[in-house]
Amino acid sequence: MLIPEELKYTEEHEWIRVEGEIGIVGITDYAQNELSDIVYVELPEVGTKVAKGERVATLEAVKTVADVYSPVTGEVVEVNEKLTDDPAIINSDPYGEGWIVKIKIENPEELEGLLSAEDYRKLIEEEEA
Amino acid sequence: MGPYIPMTDEDRKEMLKRIGVSSFEELIREIPIEARFKGKLNLPEPLSEYEVKKLLQEIAEQNQRLTIFAGGGAYDHYIPSPILHIMGHPQFYTAYTPYQAEVSQGTLQAMYEYQSLVCELLGMEVANASMYDGASALAEAALMALRIRRKRNVILYPENLNPLYKKVLLTYLHGQEDQPVEVKYDHETGMLDLDDLKSKLNENVAGVLIQHPNFFGVLEDMPTIAEMAHEAGAALVVHVDPITLGVLAPPGEYGADIATAEGQPLGLPLAYGGPYLGVFASKFEYIRQMPGRISGKTIDAEGNTGFVMTLQTREQHIRRERATSNICSNQQLCALAVAVYLSLMGKEGIREVAEQSFYRAHYLLDKLAEKGFEPAFKGAFFREFAIKTPIPAREIVDRMAEKGILAGVPLSIFGMDEDVLLVAVTEKRSKEEMDAYVKAISEVAT
Image 1: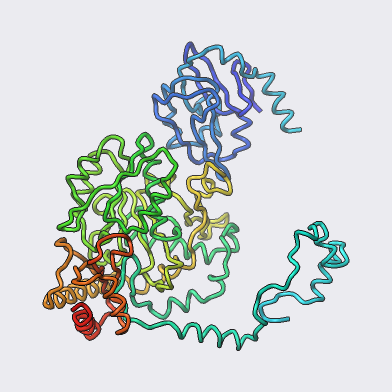
Image 2 (image 1 turned 30 degrees about the vertical axis):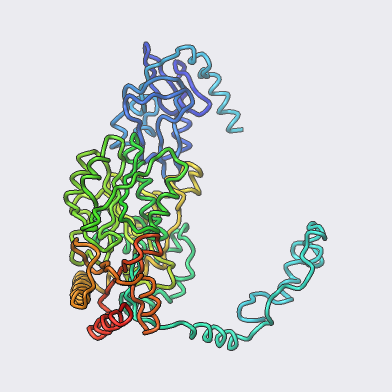
């Protein structure tokens, strides 16, 4: 299972990659594997303001529907339109082409409260145990 | 063991033994004595099957058999015999919700056929497996309009909407941030007041609800209303009388985003108001915001055609409070009846029922006009119309019942005009029955 070192994680299995004031958000390899085949992604409109922990997108898999919560507070500046036609990209490349939204980070201090790769690995080990 | 009591004393003993208690008393010992009912239940003595049948027959015989000219949402159309025959198959009427596709192919295929027929009838791209009735289907359509236009929060609904549907709609919208706003009708034509509609359309309106024909039976100017709603960026929700689609343009043709109907006229008995059927269809692009369930056609691992429930992941048993709708079931036996009705009638049959109803309703109004009964509205109608009555309409209904005729729906029962009677005519009403109606109403109204 992939848990890239350079990313920050949430307990709800989202990751965020910080590039300047923009945070790119997706779900982890573990999460996509638990959901299995993702068949539909409901994306927010660009310009939507979200608070940390608030729903920013919804993923529909064959047997369940899961919400994606924003790891930070900010404004949605871009959504991954490719997912509309091919939601399975999240399954095949969760940390790359399968990103979901880009958020303009309002409060960079929030990032400090997120999990490191090490913390996240421990979290999963506990969940698996 | 009686036919309706599935277990014997022996069965009971065995079950108690299996779970490790010696008696029924021991099984319920956790229930405090004070909380238990001690007297004798107030029930009549048991009856044999024959005695029950006789009793029910006696009750049924107290019914008065009337020639029905009442509508207001439920109509007395002919129900071809094969419908009850097919509904009577226990494989259909005892079937539980088809969660397990491999043992539910019959039910799932019936659902799929029903959906396909509804799409054809309404001219829409996708239909769900049905909802409880016309009123709940329309209210669900309002909620769906709010989902597909999520930045808007106003629902415009017509004043000339069936008052019962209005109650259900307002109940659904009650307590939410969304605002229902009523659009007036023109009291001369009975049609929606387009100026009032225009003045209420703005960038906050998520959906425009229209009943066509409206509650008074009058046809609305759908192409114009559709254009106005879409120009304002609102979703158009049209509630139709399905029989009229044998002749009138279907909602899909004038661009309805969501179409609903009461399915009762399509092969279901009047049955004192239910169970009926909520017909619900939409444009394909909104499928994921649609309430209810859908049966889909697919192929299995071996390449055989099969049917499965789809979009279930959005229903309550998986999504809980985040479900698309609180309705995650459907009215399957009634949907089956409608599917059989539509297949039996075919395009020609529905057209004939629609035409017959149309011509007969117009014949009756002409005859009534000859006797001096004025139509309450000038707008064009299909198979239901409102007339002005010289005495309270309710009295006419009471007096006509004595002559074996159910004269119509007096608007006063909904708190509207005392002197207006809503009259509906179906293909079942013969010329003799209509002439008898004119004679009877002329007698009682003077």
